Length: 187
Image (cartoon, rainbow, N blue to C red; front, side, top):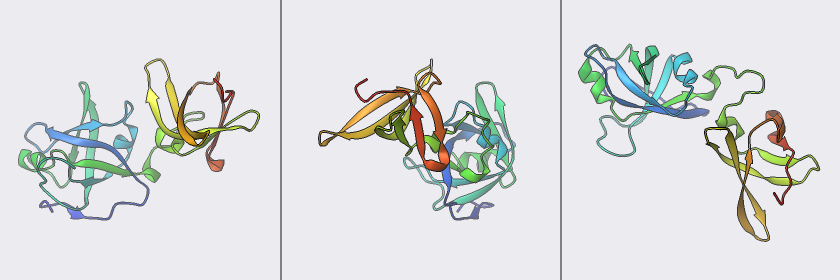
């Protein structure tokens, strides 16, 4: 474990939201690569959980808890500082660390807004009640987000895609783990 960092257990609802790229300046700040175009979870949570990079040199092992002082947008990226890191050497030691945040500490989504992580695993059903598949991932295509689903058809697994726009998506019911769509199986 790095000096100053506290060993911790990863929360059961932990979501990987980014990684630490490198030191930024001489006062312990570090650059962060967020995995989201809107990294509100990084800004709202004051407790990040770090795990070492899967590749490259590991400067620590296990899970470490980091008490974030400040995280903010700077130029085209995100920079942050933490109570346990007070100089460039400490920040450099975090290079490559994977950042996890408890899903329960994410900001509340607005009406008709959803975190992608909450949509993965939902069953997609059309208006007639025909199951179309289970969401495995989402793609940002620029113009819109696309639901990527897998379903079994004629004994084999096939992939289906539906634009995640109001013209096709009638309702997302998180409590029922279901998305209701205006889409047919043969589209």
